Length: 199
Image 1 (cartoon, rainbow, N blue to C red):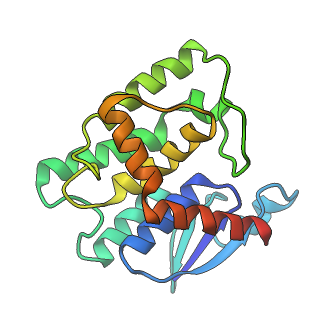
Image 2: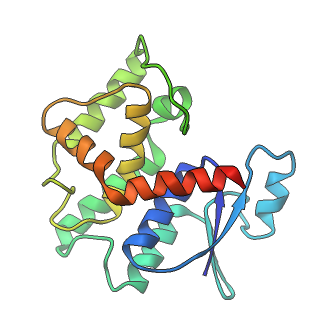
């Protein structure tokens, strides 16, 4: 399998973590998304022109949610909980992150650099942080569910983004945020992101 990733692409990192959780090896193709012709480069692999994309022989999967579902099937269900209800909740949480939190994405872009904490938070970001706290308070600890999975992979990158901007959650939500920050798979992903950045 070949995983097409982008530098500083949070969704590429999330898929990479899921690959590690399932012990599925990828060949990695890194594309610099600041290059003037990056779209043409991506289109040689992905029909959507977006990263990540997974190429498995003649099969091309060009969305992170779909890639994670494919990895889940290839690993006999390693990425989602064992019960039907919890799988539904897990998929809802992954989808919510995939389509939401636009204020945080727009105003707190992902970076590997050290930054000063935000001095003020607008109402849009405050509302999204409130929703994140509600989600994080559901965690069983140390993971969202009984076993580690896609939800942890997805939200660990968000936990890192929040910490980068000095946003530390309180109570049980804070405990889950810190658990994700301490998680070896997130730390490995950040190291991997730095490797991609150097290419």
